[in-house]
Each structure stands twice: as C-alpha cells, then as structure tokens.
Image (cartoon, rainbow, N blue to C red; front, top):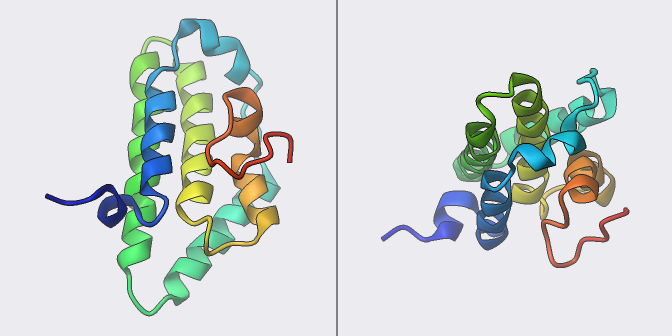
Length: 135
C-alpha cells in the first residue's frame, strides 16, 4: 500500500485534511469565493517560485507529489460546485494555490507560503497546525 506521504510528500496528512475541507464546500459557502477572479501577480509569482524550486531539485519526485496534491485538492473543491461555475472557478483556484503552498511548505519561504495559502486560510480555515490564519 502506498502511504499518503509517498503520494503527497511530507505534508501528506495535512493535504488529506485540505482535501476533506475542499470536498465539503457547498452552496452556503458560495459567498466566501464570490469576489471576481482577478489576476493576482503575487500569487502567480509565488506559484512560479515554487515551480522553479521544484525544477531545481535533483529528483522529480517532490514535483510529482506537489502536482498530485494540487490536482487532487482543486478537483475536490470543484466537484461539489459543478452547478455554480463562478464559485467552482474561485474555489478551485484558491484550493490549487493552498495545496501548492502546503505541499511545498518545507521548501519555500514564509512569504511565498502566505501568498499561496492566505485566501484559503482566511476564508475556510487553517491548513497546517503551525498556521497563523491571519498571517
């Protein structure tokens, strides 16, 4: 049997918690993700920094684990919201960013982590036991 750490990396158990939270997003939660989706240069830059760090690693394993985490969490956030495409897009983007930050948490600086996870942490809740939800 493959462990959650083998699939999602060292933060696998927290990724499972994030997956669970994303899968529970339902209509009453819509208002938390209804702001228009604008380009977010800070988050886009943070995503790019994570990808650069992953590409610089000697093995592609962590990159595959981060990809698995962000794709699973984005899908979990999107599935229950199929009938509300505007909410689905917003929740999926926030989930993708949060999963990227969480899966690469040990590889990135705190500012990059915060840029990727702050929206989710303030609208849904913490994703790691050491998170300051407001940070």
